[in-house]
Length: 271
Image (cartoon, rainbow, N blue to C red; front, side, top):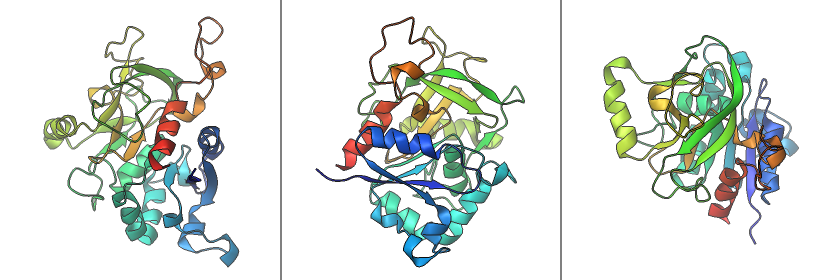
């Protein structure tokens, strides 16, 4: 069976790389925590890495570069300036790319999401703006899986099912330019790019606190048109076992946590 190599990419300020690596290791992959300088060649020769040698790219959460300028902007700019061709080649080859929380912000800043008119837009087409509450929101959140078609990330999560992933962010409100917002949302829906939406305990779309940020259409995660690039604000890597579910002592949860399916689906897609 193929050894699936995962690049868990980080810079200063990234702080969820350990959980991300553990998530992929839990489903039989071989993750490596790689600093961006290793891909850029700004390191000793024995530490250099080639993005193309990996099967999956993971951009974990945190506060990369201190979230200065905008959340994810500096990380994205450094990636784009030195790795643009490699990133485009990686995505166009069909390899999975997942960005969680700060990773989602990076993918938007890179132009890899929503990417409606090509693999990577020159400028960001969307923004992940400050939560409506004006503060950091950290708690379990319920999400409905919305994508009907095939995706490398949701083969183990039936469309319409509800999962629990923790949220922990201050800037998670998905927005488009006001003059284009309705048009962009329609394109997202027509392309089946909306992967996850926030819901309440009854499975209904609801506002705060169930939607922690005021995101357009309660969107928690989107993919590119090809379905191999996923960005989401909640953290599936933080709920890999039933013991990490807040209600695990009061309900008969399955052994695997809700978050494991995303990583298993991605790994299975490249085996």
